[in-house]
Amino acid sequence: MNNIDVGDWKTPLGYYERAIEELSRAKEELQEELKNIKASNIQILESSIQNFQTEIHSLKSEVQLTKEKLESAERTAIEAEKVANDAQTRIQNFKDNLPESTINFQIIEELAQLKGQLSQLLHLQKNPAFPESDSQKDILESLSSLRSQFSQLEAELTLVSPTSGINYSKLRDLLAENKWQEADKETYIYMLRISEREEESWLDDGEIKRLQRHDLRIINNLWIKYSDSKFGFSVQKQIWQDSKEDFKRFGDRVGWLVNLVNSEWRRYEEAIFSLDAPEGHLPYTVRLLGLGYRNPGEIPHRLKRFLSRY
Image (cartoon, rainbow, N blue to C red; front, side, top):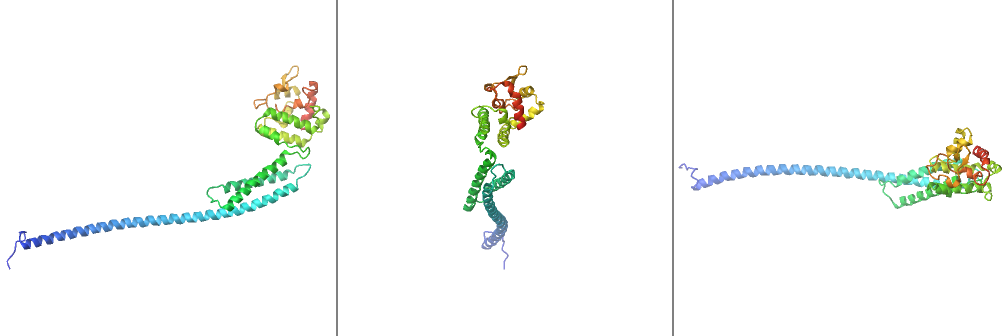
């Protein structure tokens, strides 16, 4: 058989040989491409699987967290309901056992503690981390109602005098609004009323001696609270003691005397009804003791009697 020159591709055998070579190269290239595609797809698939696993884990965590929140919210709701029921019972017991002549300060302390517990529960119930159900809304409304009842009961215990029966909420409101002159006038009216001296418009020695200490404490506490301890009977008493019970020195310190030499008292119209006034300037006690109605010379001994009464 004759040797055929394969380099001569123009012959049939050359065509065949060349086709074989091209097919072999194409096969190798296809195999390499398939290998690359397979490796790439496996990497993408593995990455996708890993992402899916991460998402599944995250979803499981969220489900568990939601479950824990629901269980915690349920426990909180049950606890809140228990406290609400207990509070309702205690409120009724407080009202049933309120003394007629004196205030039971232990009751006030217990009331304050229970009110604090309710406030914490209300704050917890409003936490957005807890889903709000219809039952929780009912409990929340119940707690809000109880807090209102507590505020009302607290006012009854602290603002209504069991001795005179006077409700001092108006004085509280005036002081809370920094209406110092109106509050001073209201204090003046109250003091005359509890002494039954409204017609006379001032207090004599005997009435000063018989002043109800409980009413004085209520009035004083309100002045102390809303003036940030700048005004009040107790503030005046401390300045009186610091002044060695010298009425001139005392009057000068509280701003009631305008002239130390001749003991000239400041007229009520010239009183300073603001926090810029000297410490102890209000309430304007000297008016209650007869300044403007009686001889000013009687004021010092009445002042001593009044402050010692408080």
